[in-house]
Length: 118
Image 1 (cartoon, rainbow, N blue to C red):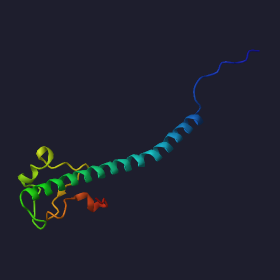
Image 2 (image 1 turned 90 degrees about the vertical axis):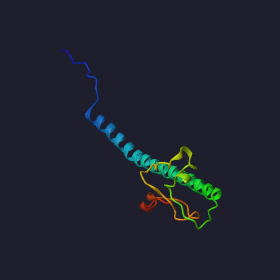
Image 3 (image 1 turned 45 degrees about the horizontal axis):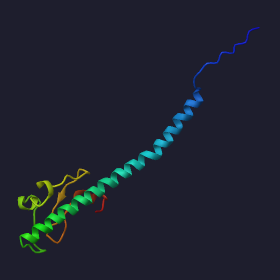
Image 4 (image 1 turned 180 degrees about the horizontal axis):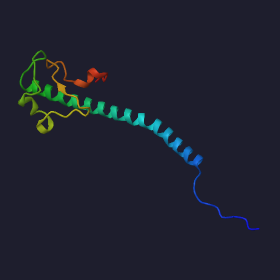
């Protein structure tokens, strides 16, 4: 009598299902962390851009003898010349920067209304 001792190589269905379940569990944990990290980095970049714009506004106001109650526009070419590269920075979250109204009030970002505080 001859016994079949040849063994087939491969994975069983149960083993494959366990591996897929583990990968799904790891993805469910990791993806929200990546989204949160992306939002945090966009927020930090936006804050840095707002500080850059505010610094340019303050320098422009000082050199042009403007007071805290004077108004400004972010489209003013003399103000934009105080920014690095001669242009407004681009918002990383696809928002828009706008003037705060007066020199004393800093610039704002449109994303601040969406629950993002700067």
